[in-house]
Image 1 (cartoon, rainbow, N blue to C red):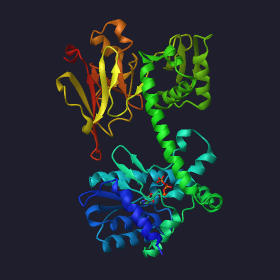
Image 2: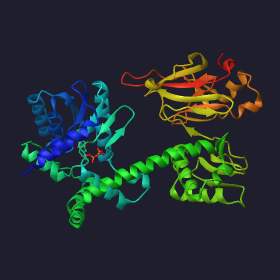
Image 3: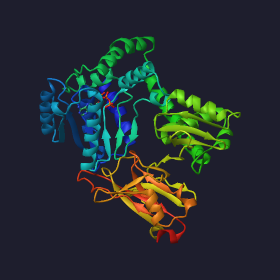
Image 4: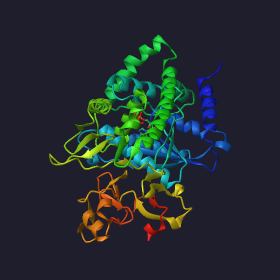
Length: 467
Ligand SMILES: Nc1ncnc2c1ncn2[C@@H]1O[C@H](COP(=O)(O)OP(=O)(O)OP(=O)(O)O)[C@@H](O)[C@H]1O
């Protein structure tokens, strides 16, 4: 009789081929001491020698339940016996927040994993999410409701800022993993979390999912198939939406005519993309509908939708965008803001182009034609955005003083007609970072814990502007 363990091992080996592991590759494995992650660890340890990576175990003791110290000790003994490197983070009770513990724990976990990946120069981070996790998450989101994007489940591969996360057990059910662990005599601890999120998940796990499996034993596989299809479609749609947004982007706003030339389906998608990626404040579903109706309304060439106390969406004939609300009577100040995605150029009419790059993507080619500002993780609040400078924007000085944009533009003898549309890079707190070609903000020194540097680059064809 073929053992489940053999099937799991064989399939795992095949999945792992895509990672092209060698004995020189270092991987960080997130191990909670549950059956899933102990199985993942065992599977990695038994890969053929020529494809077995160097393993670093990362464990977070959340101090959320009585047995956590015992689990930590168990894992310490395991690592010693198996000659594996082990890194532990203890999240002391004093650090726990009053509410949202589950979420905070997740953030602590992933920050620690990323730090360990960086420390060991690991190529991958492995977690042990499996097919039941996928189905439970999918159903919970389906029941909760929301945006289609959020229905994207757990990804088998995910590129984060510093690490590539791999989840090689997504095609296995919990039952298969348990059988594997039993047949291979692997020890583990049962998870006994009792958070609200775990209650909902447990209902899915013990009541709903078993019924759906009874309807069709292939249920888990089908959810995984749907998730993979959904991820591909949504990614493709996002790529296309990004291109279309670039096409309709103009100076200080988006082009109404070009937007209306799109099919009504793409209008929906593009507007959503703008609201999620480029708007300055959170735009609700209802506001998005109002905005769409306003743009489409030929009888109303001008109009606005208030987003919050600070921001307003405005349509002004051939232009629309998000603007800063001003005192009544004045016309809104144009902001036409776009978020700077990493490693991508943004064209700025009359000024050349700019972008923020990681070292690996740093375009060194024409160093003499570009100005660079070096930024570390802690120095600003990411992400960066590009917008027009407002006269009242303030630059910090080293001695705690400030200098207004109006003053900087006047001092630099910038003609009045150019002052309203001077490009400014700001951080997520709307703090000026760089008034292009004129002034870089003073920033506190980077922290020792910063792991990455970024290059903010402005490139112009007009050499004189750089001098
Ligand atoms: N305390 C921990 N220490 C190390 N790794 C952990 C810990 N808890 C969870 N993990 C890793 O994360 C995987 C998923 O765990 P779990 O399903 O409990 O997390 P989740 O919060 O539901 O998911 P996610 O972390 O993706 O949001 C585990 O299989 C394991 O690889």
